[in-house]
Length: 376
Image 1 (tube, rainbow, N blue to C red):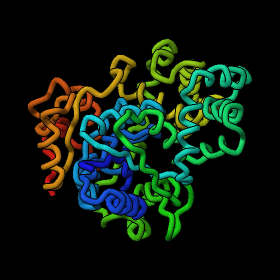
Image 2 (image 1 turned 180 degrees about the vertical axis):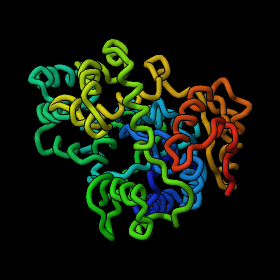
Image 3 (image 1 turned 45 degrees about the vertical axis):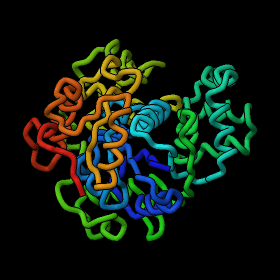
């Protein structure tokens, strides 16, 4: 096997991620490990705690060979779009397997769920539950219970299993699935054996580096980015938008745009905005993503059907060798020196300029052009 891929945020990179990287290497000896990494903006509708270049360097120090960027317009998307874009980029990078963490590494069961969730009977099974006013995740759960049975459907109640189903649905022929057991959680309390990314972000953002240190992949250096530093600017932007513009955003349908428009007229903070806009049908994650798309000035036209370039963020010598072999047959332009591809990166550059305002001391514009891939 030439290369195995991983789709990740590493927000932040912690000991659980190092374990996954090590198990992936052990399962694919001799293969280059290619990570498709979310950039400065992440799926939960937030900024990352560290910039993408820092997290990419940490990834190669922790066991990856090549790190490519998942552009923000895909990173800031629901699970099916997020997964499909990541798989597309890894396929372009020449991987032959996709390694992913999941709470239940029962591959046949997960594949059956993926086939059901993306099969011809799914929409008919889903419709009556949406009509009852259930959120999409809850309605999807009910539809899957109808198609595969309650016990099998319960697997997607776990966040990594749920994302694994979307990865499996997106995998083309020629890329083998490699499920890796995961015992930790994205969210929840922090304990010694199960690092929680959300708990670590909270510690970092309140400055408690000592408490976070045992669970991080490396000692923390550099600034901690926090979306709360843009709180008033985001509310200001949203208050100037009309319901039609909000409804036209990806995920702005089903009353989301109008509800967000009403909520921002009362909200005095971002947490209050999210709480006012959330309903049983409109999930908190979806509210955060739509609000951030609006605040960043993104529209549906900014997200193409699939990624249009392969952007390198960091690599080892092994990763550079793999890239040199694959570059000639890669179906996408390979970007190593960003200054030579300004037109392709114009949207990402603008989003990085806004991300730079989330630092403790705002950074000047143009960070996108100042960073070449780290070679470790």
